[in-house]
Image (cartoon, rainbow over all chains, first blue to last red):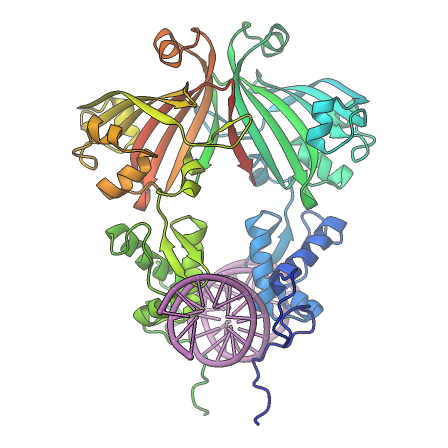
Length: 261
Length: 261
DNA sequence: AAGTGGTCTAGACCACTTT
DNA sequence: AAGTGGTCTAGACCACTTC
């Protein structure tokens, strides 16, 4: 018998792939396991948003796998916008503190001209107990503490969005109107920097409604103007819902943009 | 000097990668070139929707590249929904004749219950000359022949969508009300099978509007009911726009669903 | 058993950035 | 020159489907 060929697969890190034929019931490929390990480091804050993560070679050594396997894991994380690759520089943890990230969740675009981020005016910020519907969407118990935020957003001084947010009180303890007001830019940047909670994906339900008297007043429009109503639930690592946002969008000079692939 | 090592890169198919240092201005990686060649075969109909394409090994031989390079090309085509991989069976050309594809472009979901495809009732089908706005969006000249379609779609007998379509007359020559009516299922299936035109992506602009008298009558609702207004431009291979669709969606028992990643 | 896509490895070289 | 990600190759073996 000749010696083992150089490419035989006998990786100790993989709990499967053994010589025994029976595949374990919880089988997952090595690169998925590596991906999970990297995600853990992202979640735990070992590498913070905006920072450089270890190089592929370094991670391959750490996890005792080939660079190609690390590469495939990072490819998927990059596709999910958890990290960003930059040739020659390295791989960086994604952050909401970038123009690029600003319009990933805000899909309202001006009919004419280049998109830019709106100004916020906060109407109300308070702690309260979660109503049943909010609790259900945020995976909380009815009556759990939540932080409620209501604000109006304007483009070039024109009020266009009125939205209400509910955030788990535990995760966002210490969030006040002052901190929101002094912070410029998207709230997700604040959440990421000050509360260590990064939104990584969201689901949205959209309908058309008529403006009620209160919302019409905030948007300085007549009642019964048609508005887009969006209900958005945002998730952080581990598919944990951490924000419910209900927005009303005035679509006279703006539209909701979507790409269907 | 030792002989050339086994892994030196000297592939004749690549127009770049030569020994000369100067990179050509039109550089693109090999797998992108392979991807373009495969896309050409898809576009030309060499492999038709639903059919099996040659195996990775076969394509690697044909193009004189390694299987890994073909693999990376097909990976991207699969990510763009142009093909579908099935382990053990092969790689198939995507088709709109599948339940899976039906909801890729129709994002209106029932608030309760499982999604299903609506019934169509055609109001009008005619040839006409493209108005300026339609011509612009379809990359035609104002006055070029287009086919105009107007229909109402119902879920469980409840009229919910009224939409108007404009299609380039040249591409869809011979499309009549009869053919539309006898065809069950999504129009994109018909377009693909009968006209050899496959929609591969679309952009959509969404607003809220009030129902006018005519549309209210078609949807059997009162005038001024708020509706979602969608303007969608669909593209076939080569990013060529081949459909303009303007839809009004009743969102009382349905909502527009979106995933933000 | 044979064929397909899916995973994993090892190594070479290229393109880009920084030192 | 050194380090990073990006491309390409060659080969092994696994999981799944079909014959």
